[in-house]
Image 1 (tube, rainbow, N blue to C red):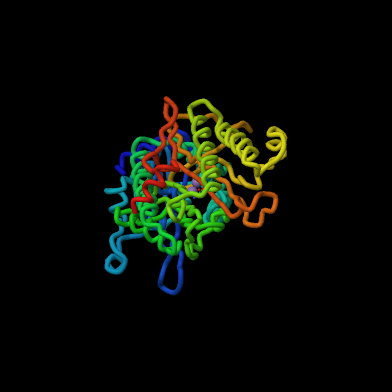
Image 2 (image 1 turned 90 degrees about the vertical axis):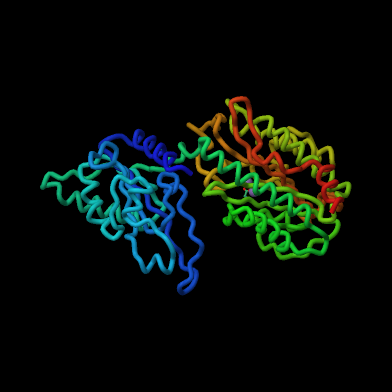
Length: 436
Ligand code: GLY
Ligand code: MN
Ligand code: MN
């Protein structure tokens, strides 16, 4: 992503913080896996959103109106030995030249310099409660300044959540962000397509997962947005099944929930299809109900409709469908009121999607579900999960788990499904799988 995009974001943030105040945010940390091996590093999304900087041990500071420069980046100094072992890093010079910080300092000097920067500021914006060490550090700096009040130094009087401003910004995607989200979505579509083409009875779930990961990596995207769920048969009824270890049986459905990340932007797709390529009658009926529910929910994705409308509609369609199929019995309005659908549809219709798979942003404003606006991206993912031991339904329904999930952009006219290219109609899936 072009550095100007990050610059624009910083400008917007500074305008909201206002002169006389300061904001700071730390990078993610490296985590040791064992001895000298670390877990793969993933930058903190908020930090990356404002800096585009992918190194650990960094801290960004924003001081609107500061004459010597409004954006300060603390990072690791360039170290030849480190470069030899671990590869390139920006160093202080790269922080200003490439990442456009107005000033850069060694992270080890952070304490002394920050004390000076915090002096006489009114509010300190930072992500409260996320990094215990930073929380503690900030309070220490403030206490230190308080002790100097007799020297005419004013300590900041207010600590404010930075997330509130930042997450509202992140909720609305720019065209540069959408470009990355489209790429992530498209590569994930291709990975799911590959899985459908390859799947055969007798394969193991992890072998299908390997086809997904193969496609991600072949296309240059190495990070999954979340651990892939590859769940055959009754495993699909475990919502966060990630063991992916069982053998796939003819006659079972396979639920795959997998998405890749492109430059820190996520995709999140679920498809469910028959291991053998052909749905049986019960599977077909439940699948069609989930698909009809998804279409009905998608109709509710347009500007000025409340976020929750799609969920409410999904509950109505699913409850009505379950009554028609005989899995629920009773009056539809009462079943909805009593939340009887929850034994088979226990999650919500979707979530915001962006740098994080369950992305940031408020779902309610002043206690009311917020209205959809162009630029928001969300998932629409109804599902039905009939536990294997559910004795209140006919045996033919038991152990079936189905979810269909797409990524959706709210547009001025309505919406655009970013994952449109991946098939989901029963006949499309069956014909694709018959060819193979
Ligand atoms: N893959 C996580 C979710 O669908 O919410
Ligand atoms: Mn999702
Ligand atoms: Mn998902």
